[in-house]
Each structure stands twice: as structure tokens, then as C-alpha cells.
Length: 81
Image 1 (tube, rainbow, N blue to C red):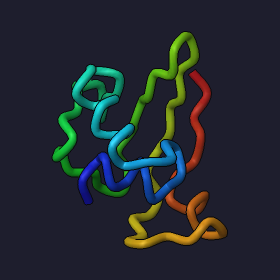
Image 2: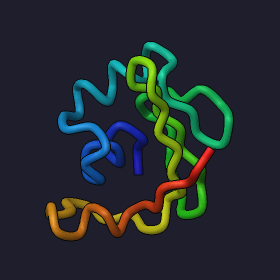
Image 3: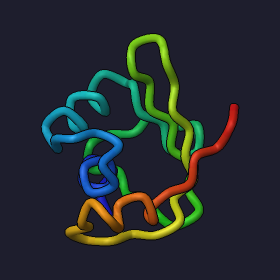
């Protein structure tokens, strides 16, 4: 699954266009590497997203296409650090 779609489906970022812009501006990392909007995400990958001064680090646990709000949190687990 593409990173921009994963961020939207998991509800980490609410809109795919915003997720795409975050990738283009270098605010999204996959396993420590800068992600492009079309970069692929796999189960087990570590994703870091920078929101202004805060940082979110998650581990991908599931890839659900068209996830509902109730299942979106099953797609990742938060990591401290």
C-alpha cells in the first residue's frame, strides 16, 4: 500500500492530499528513509511523521484497504521515542 493511502486509511492524517504534501515536504520517514507519496508500506515498517514540533512514530501492524474508523487503529501501534 502506498504511504499516502496508508496515512489516510489509518487516520493518522485525515486527507490523502495532506498526506501527499507531508511526504513531498520530507516530513514522513519509512524505516528512517524519506518517503515519497508513492513509497510502499509493508507490515513491520516503522513510520515517523512530523507535525510541526511534535513527532509520531508507529509500527505498521496491518494493511486494511478502505478501513473504517473502528478498524483504523488496528493498522498501527504507537512506539515511544
